Length: 95
View (cartoon, rainbow, N blue to C red):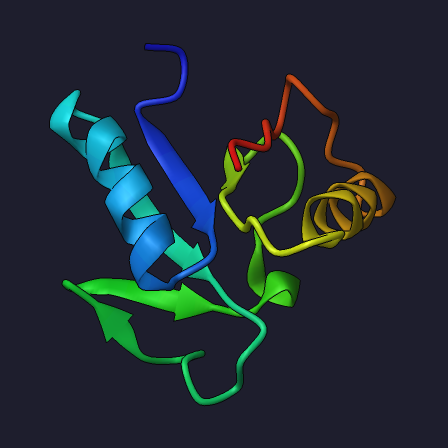
């Protein structure tokens, strides 16, 4: 377990079900990331929902994008890379 604590990009039901497999293996979700301002600053099962701008800097977190919407994976990866995050080191898309 190289990353026992992660940030999951997505906060919908499907993402939470996918992340449950990691949680069953002892991985802790530190935050959910969502673009919807109605969800940001709330909590899901005691875990905060944050905006992408609140994701910590590279090297301080590991992000797993679980958004399966068409083109979203590419957009999220591009956004993370522009912020300095590196694929395989700071994030791995899982949807």
